[in-house]
Structure formats: structure tokens, C-alpha cells
Image (cartoon, rainbow, N blue to C red):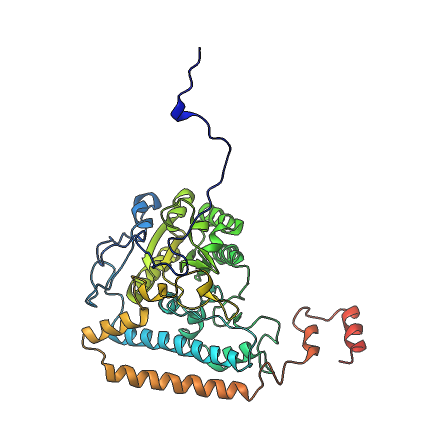
Length: 416
């Protein structure tokens, strides 16, 4: 006779687990499950290390700045004081630019905007670690890639306003920039595609025996898309010279990271199954971001294969001007984020080493505010959402080298 163990008996029916965030609106914010290592404790391997030998780096967190503002450990020392001051100015420019564009949205000058409040270090430090001719495949929250590359602020605002000087002629949503010359591939609202295209571009660069590498970007939520896995397979199989960046800012619009991460301890650990070197980094530590970005870029350029990097950060603001985060997370959660503010941390480090002061900081803020204000005023002279736009005739441009007869006839019928 077969005896059934009562404790092993089947349940009444099958059921699914629905992930739940640690805190809802009205609750006290909770970050107790966030895995954080002490600054300077995580080792720095050589760039030719085998992915299987650094599995631990996918779960640990690489950090350089400690609680006192000192740069410590094996990942420190990639930047001098002047480079740090430039990085601080880059981040300040992004933050002040964002604030100005949010104001422009309230004034009706643009229909939409997305800021990167709290995430400035990830894009700014990464871009400074690349070469000017490398190609980035960004999400809509990496305006720091352009700003750190000294891209004209007026041109960015023209695109946001969709005015007569919009380089994209009104064909993209505001903030979805594109500039091949600046190494900034067209932004796609479907973020997963950026990984696939970055890997393909990197493979093409290698096939041409070029020296340029690619840098692909997605958010934590987009790792649940099939494009993520396709890109990982091709990057791993062909050792594509690419850096694959996951910006884990804790929220995919209103969905917390548990839905995309599943039971994996971190997003970086997903790279292990593909045989890709994977690291997890304090994304609010400018020095750590630059050091790891430099390491991954050197690895790709030396033909040691791709690197997957999880940048752990926090989206302080709303997902976009169409979002209200108070509907899905505690209002005080952004202010209790344990990794702090990237601008404050770099500022404090510079003061700590005697290369900055509160007075210099105030002066820098004033200078950047003036620069952004002047850029916005200049862009407004070319029109805003409420005034002068690109000509509708431009819809026939930039697709064919020679306009086909049927489109030429349509253009004539439309009176252009």
C-alpha cells in the first residue's frame, strides 16, 4: 500500500506568486534587502579575467567613496582633481537642465519631459570613460551622455521644443535625442531594442577591424524583455566589444524591480548563465562608475569580450511628466535611499581632499544656471510647442537618397 505523507500532500490547487514591494504609499520605506558592501572592499580583477572567475562580482557592490568622503580600495585613483571637478559640473548641468525643462513643460513649451534626478553619475561618469567616437545606445534617462560629451544645450532644447531648429524635425518625442556625431544612437521608447542594436553595432565594428566599441543601455524592467536575452546570447557567442548597462533605479514606471528580477539576487547575476563578465556597482558613486566603465571599455577594446554592469541607483523623481509616483511608493522613500545623492557625494569628496569649497560650489551652480537659462532663451527664439515648428514638408526628407516618383507626386499634391 502506498502511504501519502500528509506534509507532502498536494495543495487544493495551483497558484502563482505575485511579487509585492516592501512598502506601499503610507508605509515606512524599507531597503533592508539591498546588498551593499563597504567601500573599497570589492576586488579589482585584470581586464582579461575569465567571467567564471568573477562570479562574486555580480552579487557584491563595487564602491569607492566611503562615508567620510574618502576614495578607498583597488578601484580608486582613475581620476585627478580636475577630472572630478569637471564631473561635478557635468552632473550639476544635467540636474539644472532637468529642472529648467520641467518648468518649460509647466509653461506649455513642450508636451513631455523625463528627468534623471538622482541618476546623474551613471551617464556622466560613463561617458567620460569612453572615447568620443564610441557609440552609446541610451534610454531616455541618459541625457548625461550628451552633456558630458559637450553636446550643445540649445540643440537639445530645440529637440524638446520640436521647434523650427529641431535636428530631428519633430519626428521624435521630446527627450528622444539622436546624434551620430556625438556617439548617441536614436532613443527608442521600447528600451530592450537598445541592447540588441548595441551588440549588432559592436559586432559590425569588429568585423571592420575598427577600434570603436558600443555601450548599450536599458532599465531594470527591460531585462524582462526577450530582446535582453537575444542580445546577451549574441554578445556572449561572438565576444562583441560592448558594454551592456542595466540601470537599476528600483522602479520600472510604477512596477518595482521584483517583477523583472524574479528570484535572482541581483540583475548582474543574470550575466553568469551567458558566460559574460558581470559586475554590480554603486551607481551614485561617480568614482566607482568611472572606474568600472574604464575597466569594461578596456576589456572590450582588448578583445576580451562584453561586460554586463548593473548600476544600482534610485529614480528620485517621477517616471515622466505623465506620472505620479505618490500612487505607488512612499513619498519619503527617495529621501531614505541609502546610497545618497551622487552630486553631494562627489562635492563632499572634493572638499575632503581640499579641491573644492562651498563657495566654489555656489559659484559653479550660479554659472551653470546662467548657461542653461541662456540656452533655453536662445532655443525659445526658434519656437516652442506652442509656436513655430518644423515644416510638414520635411516628412518627405531623409528617407530616400532619391525621392521615389510616388512620394514626389504626394508632395506636390500636398502643396510642398
